[in-house]
Length: 206
Image (cartoon, rainbow, N blue to C red; front, side):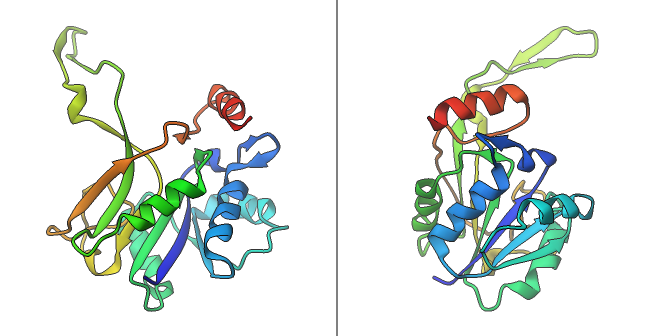
């Protein structure tokens, strides 16, 4: 399966460092270990592009940087279309997640079977979720089994990408008939949002 590899810079936390290595540099190295000399597309909002270029200045990977907000599915699709180059699928890794592993990326790649169009890893939601009304009264407690915490990466078959807008919560708009699969995520791979997250990830890295 020919795959287009994309690294998405969804927030400034992609530049945060765990043991002196930024999330974006660590993730790009893992992708390079998997795909070798293949071109990697890095999608970044124009405001963060200078910092990205500085962070990856010493990288030996073949990189193409595109200035686009990767959290806007339709805009990302338009920016990526010319880079697919006959690819069967697109793998998108969110660089704001710490400790993305080679194993999880490979498991995601292996999970795209003939009857599946899009795959991503998820974690069970363990916190208690409550619906609070305007007067701070608890209206209801949500069933945690119906909520999942999305991890990274996402693997999407090119033929399943919709040309129109889609609100399915994936990096790229999916056709309404797209067949999706959720696989179990490594619990160590979490989004980095604070100094506490960095400290915890550093401990897990040891």
